[in-house]
Image (cartoon, helix red, strand yellow):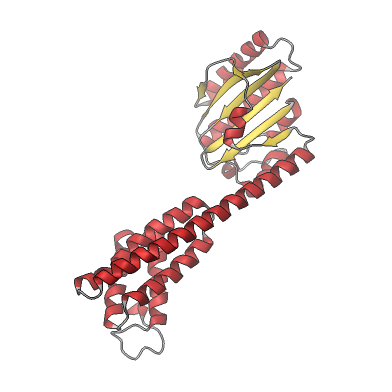
Amino acid sequence: MESFRVAGDQDPGKLSEWGLSGAYAAAFKAFVDGGGEAALEQAYEIGRRAIDSGLGVLDMATIHEAVLETSLRRARSPEACARLIKAAEDFFAETLAPYEMAQRGYRQANSELRELNRTLEKRVEARTRQLREKDRAVRQAYVDVFSAVTGGKLIILTADELVTSLGRPATESCEVNDFKAVVEARARLSKVLDRDFPGLTDIGGLVLAADEALVNAVKHAGGGNYRVFKDGRNAQVLISDSGPGIDFSILPKATLMAGFSTKRTLGMGFSVMLDFCGRVLLATGAGGTSVVLEMK
């Protein structure tokens, strides 16, 4: 733990509060990044050195709160906030362990920890609300922009909204996990569409668009599922997967730039889909991507 010393420390066995803050922040980051028991050992050592330096539980709580608040400001999702608060509880408890063992302020430590947790929970809730509001605002902006640019052909939806947009199922859901299954899916889709939707504008074009989505689901998400729906006289082909989703930061390129493809965005050929389909409905997120291809 000699790396915890800072310029100006007179006693090599003690830590200044400033030096402790830096050590605490570094050890906490290591723990959050997967440091495991080694990082927790550092937490315990920080607590022991804090006692030797004459710092109390309230001092530790103040340092802990500042470090965690900084980390929460950098979080980019409600899930990340939740992981940070859980890690903070474990890390702070380990830091206070020396106080318990030395029988110095253990009851106070518990009281301060509970109060701190209540305060932090409120901040996490506030941060979560902010992130969700921001996500809604960004999503609405994409909805408006894509609708305008594509003449209403590409529509961004939430997963729940996409489900409500589907008509009556015309087939069972079929799984596609390799390219051989994609070939079989093409033949099956052609047969179903020709039989159940004889008035479609371009059955071959719809099958081609579905083929593009299925190929990319196999390539970039390890596979997916497809199912045909009937909405009045319209045909709908749903292709869904459980991959990483399309990164919203490059969604315009992934959907509007012909040939654009990266593993991170699934690289689905939206240019092909938009060329042949009347509408393309898209829902994407960390849980996967779903596309509905519609044709009158």
